Image 1 (cartoon, rainbow, N blue to C red):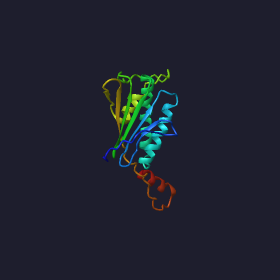
Image 2 (image 1 turned 180 degrees about the horizontal axis):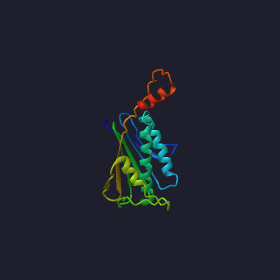
Image 3 (image 1 turned 60 degrees about the horizontal axis):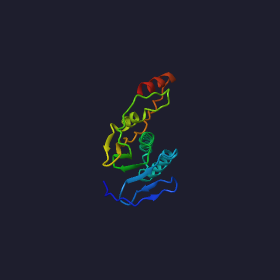
Image 4 (image 1 turned 120 degrees about the horizontal axis):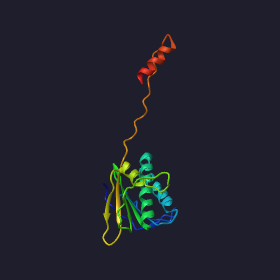
Length: 181
């Protein structure tokens, strides 16, 4: 992993979030968020722009990352009331995600109730993509929820079937193609 260099925070004028990194020689990134109604959406846009800069060839990983970030930050806003911090570390084979908030209450998965519209899927989705989350109680107050999103394996190119040999009857070619699948 490259040496870590944390920059002084600056404001990302496209989102209004305070942003640290990326800086030369690092793939670490930090942003703060509030409980503002558009905060999660703006943070997603900032994460998308960052990840597209450091891993432009990994759109499938970006989409998974955006889902995990959305779920963890939404939980922090909904259950802790914000403000909070999102830290990303893009490693060669994974992305470490850490969301800090002011609550010391541990996140607990709950049974989703899709009919009620009250959520409950977030931690299940994160666990499906990342495995179990880790929670660190921060000294003083608050907590940090950690998840590691492994990089997907590159998708293999679609296999193409060779053209069957010329057949005297069209049904023979169809049978051969079906058998080769």
